[in-house]
Image (cartoon, rainbow, N blue to C red):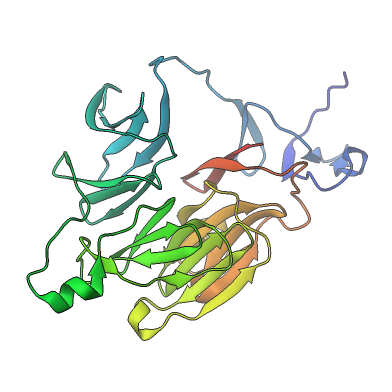
Amino acid sequence: MITTHFSVWRGLNTSAHPEGLLYDGRSGTCELALAVDVDILDNGRRVRCRPGRVLVDSRDWRDGYNAPDGQAYAVVDGVICEVLEDLSVRPLAALQSPGPVAWAALGDIVFWSNGVESGLIQWGEAGEWGGRRFPVASEAARYVDPAAGQVLGAAFGRVWIGRDDVLHYTAGAWNFEKAGASGIMLPARITMIRPVDDGLYVGTEAAVFFLAGANPAAGMPVRRVSIDPAIPGSDVLVRADDYGRFDPVTGVIWTGPRGICLGLPDGIVINLTKNRVALDAPASGAAAVALPLRYVAILHP
């Protein structure tokens, strides 16, 4: 093993051969092909080992969600639970099917769906999503119960539901009990729904699209903005200027086969790691989080 000392780290470079990585013995500047269990701080001038992990619960935890109001939820042993500050859980709703749970929040209401079942959490209690009867027959004909979807999003007073290759949406004006009888067709199965100020980024198994506007009734033109799909679960909302010289607006970060991308308003997509990061093998899923000035994604084969 060869030990190399460096003083300035210029980041990961997984697209070049290891022998071609930058290293300047005089200044101590270098690139790395792999960094395990370390944090690089102070613009690459300091390295810190990450703290170890502690087992807090041996049950089957999955599909965690941090709501905008600070509440946390997860599926624990097949039951949707609220996660309390001491990491104990409060059961809310037992699931009857095993699919991954998608989440979205509109105001103080949290919506969930696993593609077969769906529901909501309001005032700390689980409830049904849908089932409302409209007294006017014309209203009953225009709206249907929200479909169960494999991915959810919330923006512009609506909940957006990806079911297979159709983007459904609730009635608007915060009427989340009913959805439009029709939806927006996409070319492939939907895997991501994320809003920015002037539209939606919708990822599919084939590519990423931008839907301009906020009102489906007025039309939302669909434009492909990335030929590469986003890895499911790798998408998070961020403040764009935390990741470069961009305006302080809401953006969407995701990981794709060619690197980490930032989606800005107007459907502008920037590959933040162009020619520096490439995946050795395809990933079927991911978990991601946005920390201050940092985006972390864990990929699953």
